[in-house]
Image 1 (cartoon, rainbow, N blue to C red):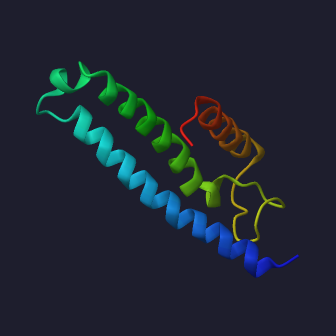
Image 2 (image 1 turned 180 degrees about the vertical axis):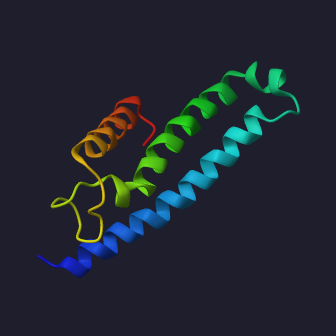
Length: 103
């Protein structure tokens, strides 16, 4: 049991999830932007890209918020601010993202 390693990996996933959240949000803004929205949504590959980006925004957003969502007594030491309800929400969105294949 290495608490420093658990904290390091937790903060590493926080950083990479933040970058993923920003990137997927920019993709969503590009596809849904005011210039050519109807033209963009008529193309199947852009609709698929939009669906994958929305799913990644959900999963990355929950991963970024995992410091808040873990209940006290569970998870890594500095992430004990949530309740069992927020933990269940985190689990639901994580499993939903895995089931839809965005990862």
